[in-house]
Amino acid sequence: MNGNQAIAHILKAEGVAWLSAFPAQPLIDEAARAGIRPIICRQERTGVNMADGFSRTTNGRPFGVFTMQTGPGAENALGGAAQAYADSIPLLLLPGGASTARTQVPPNFDAVDNYRGITKWAANINQVERIPELMRRAFSQLAHGRPGPVLVEIPSDLGAAEFPGDFAYQPVKAYKSGADPDAVRDLVAALIKAECPVINAGHGVLWAAATDQLVALAELLNAPVMTTLAGKSAFPENHSLALGTGGHTGTLMVDRFLQKTDFVLGVGTSFTISAFNAPMPARAVLAQVTNCAEDLNKDYRIDFGAIGDARIVLEQIVEEVRRQLGTDGRADGRGTAAEIAAIRAEFNATWAPRFRSDEVPINPYRVFAELARAVDVPNTIITHDSGYPRDQLVPFWRPQVPRGYIGWGKSTQLGYGLGLALGAKLAAPDKQVINVMGDAAFGMAGLDIETAVRAKIPILTVVLNNGVMTHYDQHMPYASEHYQSNRLGGHYAQVAEALGAHAERVESPPDLAPAIQRALAANREGRAALVEVMTKAEENVAKFW
Image 1 (cartoon, rainbow, N blue to C red):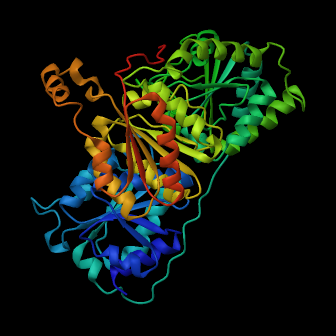
Image 2: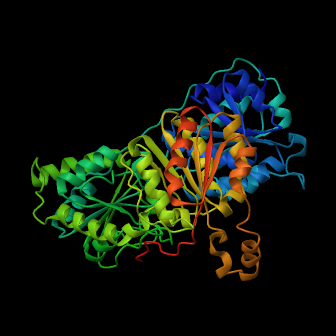
């Protein structure tokens, strides 16, 4: 058994059934021989994005894996790793490396040094017999603490070297912990005293698979729940206590309750100050449940903290609420559910004309309305690209199950959503998976539609082609004017069709619903599909803060 074969056997033992890859990397063939399906992408960044989307959808068991050749492969994957690091996504990167005799000899690319700032942990295999140890450490880093990408570089000579002695490896177990009971008691006492508490659910609720516990707490207190962008779908948005998302854009319900709240309980959120998170009100008491101690008092002063796994700590909080309030909790004496329903009705009435619009070019909100009518939302995973697709979709799509929406935005690389959708479909083959992207994003990642076709990953890509290149004309008017003068940058449906996908271009609102239905039918037949919709440059987004 050589080093690459040992790594492949470890991946198999850890439950890895497929990995995304780009040649030339000897590990690819060894993984295939071990029964792991390699999927070759068109570019390395999309391969990392696929591993990212897979890890999100499985909640990290198993983790997504991407392997690439030394030098240009590792260099090209850097952007995908940076995006995963920004959004705290656990995935394993396995780049090839220069031989041990040429390690740290310029200009050979050193993945460990160059990735150190955008990975949670990075190591170089310096002896073939250390492979089980280093891989065990890698999977332990993936399974514990703040999620993030992990890298193990494989020098070419050690990948081919014979593994000495007997090979043994036991899969890594994940260990979780709860919070200090005294901290929970004090947090709950303050929470109960609040006049208008709001629960802010972040990505950590999804990683902990804690949606049921979150719903139980909300119902026990009759407290409204908002989510962060990354946490969207952690709380079902068809629930009477759901406020929706507070990201770069958000809902009127979030805005109104943040204006009046006196207590915000953040669960599984870092409370990071960012353009992509609704700001927390200065007058409110802040409490935070996190498994990352370094999040406490990072951007906001925290009044109450509980460190531990979100699911375990929510169970502790629910138990403590029942101890302090009684088994049935608190009745909805403030009429919270009715207030939320009234605000939602006001919000929907304001935006309804755009969802029904017969404008030409087509209003993008009409596209979202047709998509929501065409699919079974609980059986759908939808994601978006950055810019207008994100800002327009986030406030209005109402996921009902965990991971029914893949939200992201700490970094905003164009083209990210396509790889996420491919990885999500591999993790959940029975789900309908949709990616909504703009024309500029297609230019970044569109050729990986061919990956979906070749690898038989039947996702639906919706391209909102408004020809404004995410409105970069605000920053670079000459370049954007030149882009628009070339008639919206191209005919993307023709590109997708040439790549082997079912593809249609829609220019008129009455043609939209039938085109979506045909694309979904193609997905059910195992074909990737793309619908390019010629949309207007819709400036209106639901932004309140």
